[in-house]
Amino acid sequence: MFDTHELGRRPGALQRLTRSIEAPGSPDVLGIDGVIGVPEGAPVELEIRLESVMEGVLVTGTARASAEGECVRCLEPLKLEVEADFQEMFSYPDADDRGRTAEPADDAEDDEDRLYLEDGLFDLEPVLRDAVVLALPMQPVCRDDCPGLCSQCGARLADDPEHHHDALDIRWAALQGLAGTIQDGEKDDVSGAEAGVDEKQEK
Image 1 (cartoon, helix red, strand yellow):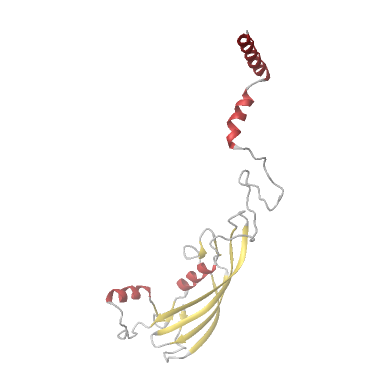
Image 2 (cartoon, rainbow, N blue to C red):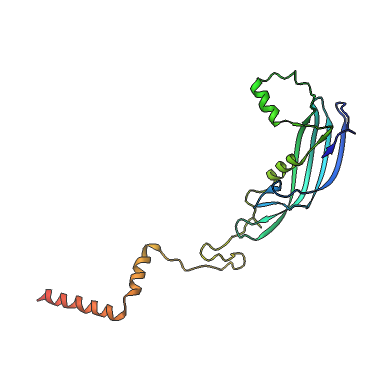
């Protein structure tokens, strides 16, 4: 929670804060659970600017942290530095909304999305979580040209660039399997039978 009492309610008043916090854990992990995120308890460096306005306090800032995850191509663990910018309005509970001209239904939707100050305090965690998720890659890779894994045996291709398998045309696979079941003697018997048939036809 952050305190705005020192800022006051005079419009135009500014306050700058630098804070280091610990990343929350599941279910409120900073990131995409199971893919990439800031580990629980890891430091998150915050630079925040508070500005007092008529309706409340406008909070603008940047969060920096180290995220950990797994490459979606080769499944190797990876780390990357994440920097997330955010801006959010925290309204005073007694803010005068009489000047708004929106329809009643729109007012109800806006109220659901609005965040409020409670006794001059505001919780930055939901805003921070959304900002970090948007700043992280949906499909993280250890490097841009990661070749991934072999689709046939699962070998990591970056470790063996020459890795390959002899390609088999699936259209001939059944015939090759049939050919493997016929022994040499059987081939000779079939050939002899065919020759006898040919001789009878010639007579």
